[in-house]
Amino acid sequence: MRIYHVSRALRELRDHGLVELLTPEAKGRGRLYGLTGSGSGLLEFLTDSKRRFVPHGAAGAVPSGFVPKVRASSLLRFVEYLRKTQGEAEVREVLAAWGVNPKGLAEDTWLSVDACARFLEVAESRFGDGSYSFIRSAFAGAVSMFPTVREQLAKRVPLEALAESAPIVYSKDWNYGRIEVETAPRRATFRHFDWMPTPAMCALFHGVYEGVLAARGFRGKVTKTACVREGDASCEYRAEW
Image (cartoon, rainbow, N blue to C red; front, side, top):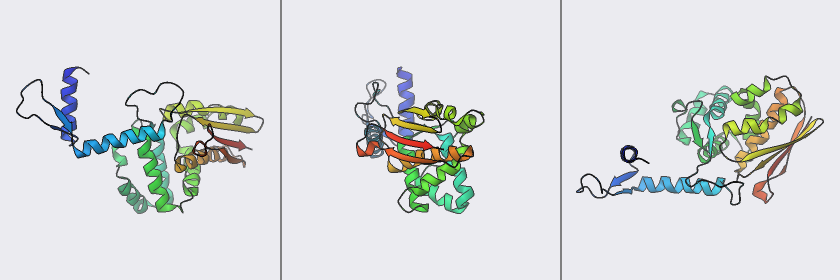
């Protein structure tokens, strides 16, 4: 970074209480800064996120300081769906427990995947029974509202062709991992590679695929047939209709 960018960044970090000046007697160049307790906690949080969501051996080199992220647009639509189905008061309590104000999020804001996973856990603990079936069914109901998914659903193409667009949609909303799709007549298999999902995130995608079937008017089924958390090479979802 250029020196004036460093100075600006340090000012912002100090304003947020993340760093402190260790040499207040020094003037101009040569001043030393250190992390505060809050700064150390945030660094640990980001490092832990990288360990959990970027598996060792993932395809391609992972840049230093990389943080897995998801675009906020879909999460905002999910919050909107929760308001319609659970009520404003209930959702307000969930958001308070999450600690992120959605009013501060824009459609193109990028959230850490760890923050997204925390929100799913809070929602499941509030509305579900610990099996993540609530997350699965809620995303099945909300997915047709997601901007990138809605764009694809508007295309009147065979469902097999729609399934093959899943990697394009994923790459617009997630900055890590990848999807491979294999299709056959009235069937599609989605494989998620290079990621380390939480149970809630597995339920999220299970619901997404079920919701897409329903949005196109098919009474099919989606089966989870493999999972990275169980030692498989990918998380695999098989859709049949």
